[in-house]
Length: 166
Image (cartoon, rainbow, N blue to C red; front, side):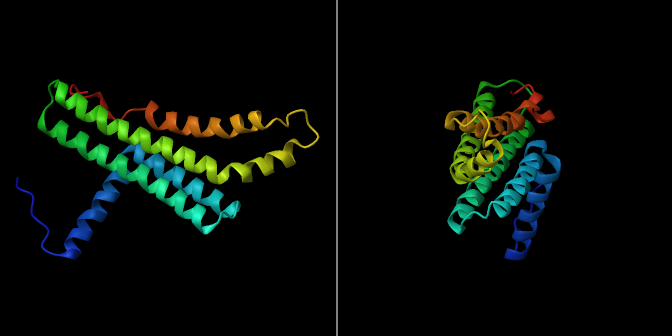
């Protein structure tokens, strides 16, 4: 079966939108990332982050979703090409997955920088008068959810990840 070339901008946009919908519906990790995006954007509204902070957060979110979509496309192409083990296929999949991890770590740092002071203010109000007032402990309380979300994205592999070329 030959894939038809886009004849015009409208067709190209329709195909691109279809690709986004396929990724959002069919890929667990991308589906979760869209869910995390909603939570982060709600927190952005609640904490009233500045426009520049919002731009950074949206950029970080977009970077994660785009790298995940590219990773998915690479994996699908490799799986379409071969179902036998190949060191080249494994390297390609591992490199693409590595790009996703780097983007998630980057997004975690951006999120920490943007939300740190705001979350610390809330924690100070909650913990005021309590024994826990150390900034290191508060930083750990902030970083744990970021690490948890990053791990959550990669603890349940998609069926495609179980192929022999992995």
